[in-house]
Image (cartoon, rainbow, N blue to C red; front, side):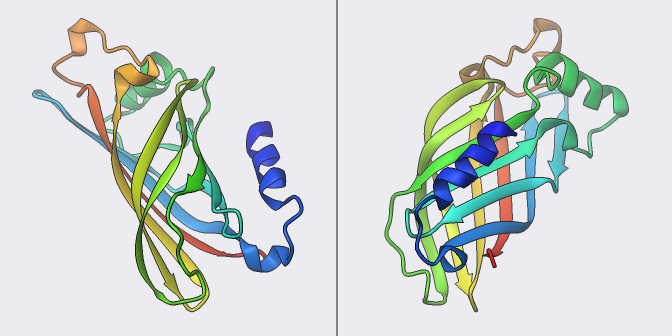
Length: 182
């Protein structure tokens, strides 16, 4: 939480016209899907937090790992939090960085951009470029993105006994509605 607050302060520091430059998530959802030979696992969280500073092309997003719901069973959720994600040690996942492309945030439209930054999952940061779609309409922003997370990149171990039930690559989807900070 401290890191996220620090990022928010850094994004805002020295920005003229603060309320017109900073957008924050008002509603967001992140979901993941694991399609393994013996089991499909899906869960989602509506607890996405985030900010975008359009003047600096900077962003910071996070989600609490224990907030994911929708598993096949309570035991599966327990294993997700305790055995794989170790959410007592690594309670959040985050992505922070910069938007590579220049877009005109004052014009309504749909823009495809690349977000370059550090994806932190399970305490392991990886440099990533994630393609995203930004829709600007009437002063609001909607972000949509789909990407893959390779568990081994974040030191998430799959015990051999469940290797047929958990995919080594997880599909992630995120949507977020952002509004200017007033």
